[in-house]
Length: 302
Ligand SMILES: O=c1[nH]c(=O)c2[nH]c(=O)[nH]c2[nH]1
Image 1: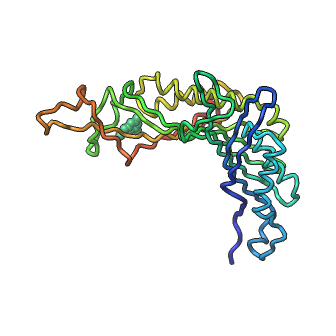
Image 2 (image 1 turned 120 degrees about the vertical axis):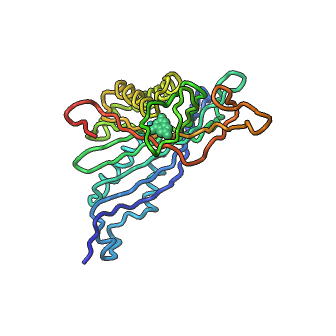
Image 3 (image 1 turned 90 degrees about the horizontal axis):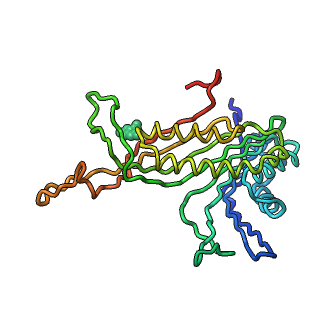
């Protein structure tokens, strides 16, 4: 005998673009998103009894995403995701949870001759602003906001020494190395009871994203890094300090290695240690360092 242990379904990779035209100033603002909506509820019979009557078609889910984008503001993604997710839970009595993921792509207004252009934008990096919004009937709205794909490099101001040495160790200690990573950072908000409460906090979503991005860049640049671990913890504790509604901040940082190349085989060319100038960037393997920073207290545990 088998049983359905868990199920959710919906539409993924729904690409949506929305423009706002300010008639007075002529300034247009654009948002491009990739949306995923997955539903849970009393849908078991659709799997076990071929009962399609409980299925809100994924095509209808896609249509609902477009209509909601037309009728509601799509910024902030936290608010839009909460409105969208709550719609499914409120509209269909047998749907008890909606999981909304929104990836917001980076369109930055162009500066032309030193002035912001009214309707032209540049995608200056693959970086995205993401949210995961989980609306659960009777419980509330859980929101996780994140930065992804923010690639950074510093050419000095990073060290790595004093690490455990044994018969498996070949890595040399260094007091000056290149540090590069692709930042994934996310922050978990304390549970909101409903959409109105999410809307009441709308300004915090943008300001916290801006603070998280600025803290990440400033700390990366200015910290004389002892390790990826020590630097990412400093980032996490500063972000937690900026917003009291945050429960945790999580970082996931690959350590993208740049290896020195010994060029002494060519006429004794010096290219290691203090003479190193030409390096070989590595695609793999890479270090992968993660941590979650929470507020100290009885709940904190490893
Ligand atoms: O910042 C670092 N953390 C590590 O855990 C580690 N391990 C390693 O080989 N290099 C580095 N660098």
